[in-house]
Image 1 (cartoon, rainbow, N blue to C red):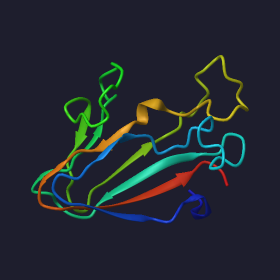
Image 2: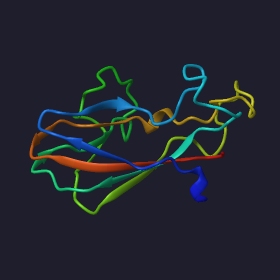
Image 3: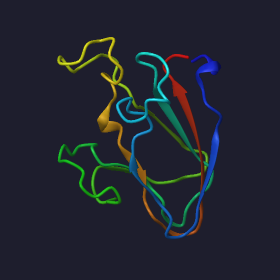
Length: 141
């Protein structure tokens, strides 16, 4: 991946009882018009690095993994896939689909291939501290 498509890395710290509610890393162009500057351009890949072990909690959750029910509670960490934080590990996931799967949406339309199933969040840290870093890569300049 060409490095000019990557944003600056961000370092994150979560103390006990802190979390990040489920969200998408892409910018829906119907909402964030100023962030999407060219047709089809968006955050494509997320690399999430775990910089510390956490004694309890702090998992990254993907609620749609193996569960197609609508998400109504964006703080729910009881469903889907949970990845425990372990220093030195990283997770990589995509925010966009490889192809336009929406027949109603022209291929050139912004937002056609955003992957709503990439919804993810950070569960409460129960005991210890969570240190992590994220790196976002766009699909085009």
